[in-house]
Amino acid sequence: MMRIVEKIRQKNDNYHFSPIPTIVFLGDSVTHGCFEVIEGTKRTLEVVCDFEAVYHNQFKKILSMVFPFAQINIVNAGISGDTAQGGSQRLERDVLRFNPDLVVVCYGLNDSNKGKEYLNEYLEGLAKIFLELKKNDIEVIFLTPNMKNTYISPAIKSLPLIEMAKLNMESQINGTLDLYIDSAKEFCQKEKIVVCDCYQKWKKLYYSGVDTTNLLSNFINHPSRPMHKLFAWSLFETIMF
Image (tube, helix red, strand yellow):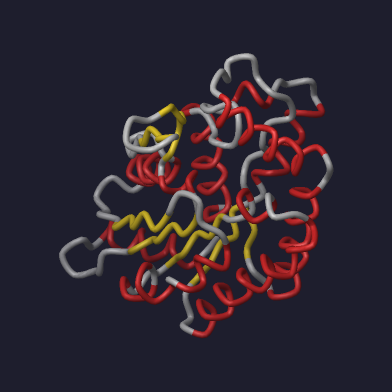
């Protein structure tokens, strides 16, 4: 059980005198709350955000179910299109200034689109984040991401989206995303960083014959609303058991 659970329990049991726990979620578009991607009017592509369905809001609902008197601050520090390097550069502004008790970090989707030759850049970005959080005695979880598309869905019609789907599909099926996530997990094991491995769960679904591309709201890289609950329950299991 992680320290954050005890802090939430204390707030639940003694809400007059215990501080409100703060959890920050640092990541890319999935953490941001992005779902469908559509052709836009002001820009070529626009994303649909749903802050009700996003996994950290679902996670908060689970915590509120088991700790019904505890207020919990959730900070959404996800930015669409972000990478681990980007996250490390905005750590002070978007994370540390909130004095979090726990930070959940989720990167790899955009990073892996750069190719296997940029693996070290990804790992260096994660290392900066993790080590800075550890230096400040902040609990951290590395949340591995979902799978990307393994084929071009016929539901994708526009050329820009087709090109985006091709880029993401390539990094999924040629093993680049696997390499990135496996390498990140190895680093976490070395540095004793807690891992919530949802990527492995997606892979098990895929190898069980599940059409994981159809579980993506944009059929490319954003999980559907129901699949955000997998992240939420997995995080709950990680902190509790």
